[in-house]
Image 1 (tube, one colour):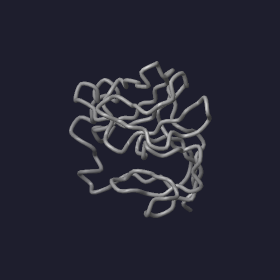
Image 2 (cartoon, helix red, strand yellow; image 1 turned 60 degrees about the vertical axis):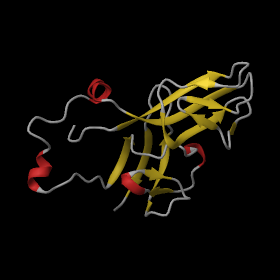
Image 3 (tube, helix red, strand yellow; image 1 turned 90 degrees about the horizontal axis):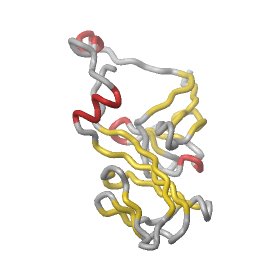
Length: 161
């Protein structure tokens, strides 16, 4: 891996208890939370997120929460390993890798987006991917896999040629 990861994505499912509050395993990055109510089959429009809790949920419903969180050094090493010894060779040569087409799974996406409902994929600040509401360049591709509990990555297939 050429670069150390600073953030990671997590997807958790809950049955909302009588308190209407669910507690996430990690504290999400502000603005990087998406809550889907599996019972009503709709996105929760304005969930209230305070630290690692999500409120304003319907008691008894099944919800899935997708979010991005900051990694500690220990978490980063455990999840993705060490960076290449001596550093990334492209840094010495002034090069970066480029993918022009194919199927990729990425952790660099806006976690607050309902990826099941996107009509376009666009670039967002800091190299993130976002939906049609973004202001960046559109990527000619489609979502083929949304983040899930087992695989918290976004799968897209595209061709830039």
